[in-house]
Image 1 (cartoon, one colour):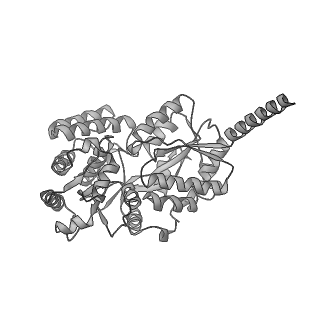
Image 2 (spheres, one colour; image 1 turned 30 degrees about the vertical axis):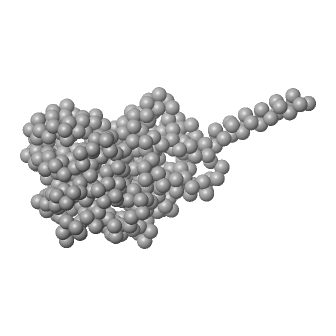
Image 3 (spheres, helix red, strand yellow; image 1 turned 180 degrees about the horizontal axis):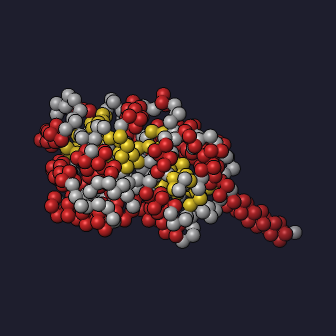
Length: 416
């Protein structure tokens, strides 16, 4: 009898393990930093209110802009071991890496089924689509070309209005440095942040129309504006912290919070991080579009899709339908420091910074980010990131400009 009970117990345990495995949901992302992790946990909590029996497996991999996570994900996808759903940037990162190789299922019908298909801006739906089918749900929209600054230090250096030109901006960076502060904090340990800075300077010098044409083959990389962008970056690098290569983007943002740095040029996920540290937008910190980009909104959008052969496909579908709702987007984005991808979200739930971002998103020219996967294929972005990181050390404008032309040519972009 005792033996029978033991065997029966083992059978129940095994059955429970199988049931748990069948009722799981593995979500892969790189949201592990302040603000973003809290937002993800809020999503999980809300999802489990609707589906309490689904066990969520948080398969997040740390590393700014997903550098580490993307490498792990690619290995899993190519190895036939996909998660149930994963974070991916809208644009070329989605289509070039996963959709065109045939690794994703279309989800157009899912969005239509829940009445969400026409609740996203057409321009955003277009960049998560391929050959007329949607392949991922946009969860948020970030603005990449933003400078966040310490208002107390701004007052000390006499900044009475936010700078709109490079002359004004560099003047304030210089004043901050002379008073013992870092002018503009940089944390490029994970490499991507240097290109994040450069692409926005490039946007400023080219203007959004010409910048956008680069990715359509309608404008040439052999443009003096790109060389000017390198020269401006060289000027800005005079005011960064000496230990930048040892710091992450969170570390650099924290320097502003700790009163060690006047400013940090970062995407507005930094706003979410500053709020987790206890600051309130408009009170302890301010912001402005990087000089020259006031009329442009450099877009970064996080999305989730449905891999082919997802182990728990039905739960993955529940997750995607959930993410498309106003409730999910209005839960996640105020914490993350981003604006909702849906156009019918409740603006009253968003702080003064995010309302500013919402307004600009609806009125300014939209430009895709290189390093965050929207503008160009991964091979181009990686090569350009390496060139810009080398530039941060060597600061040779002519040499780097030539390298950019070589990279563009290798990736079939115009250089004539």
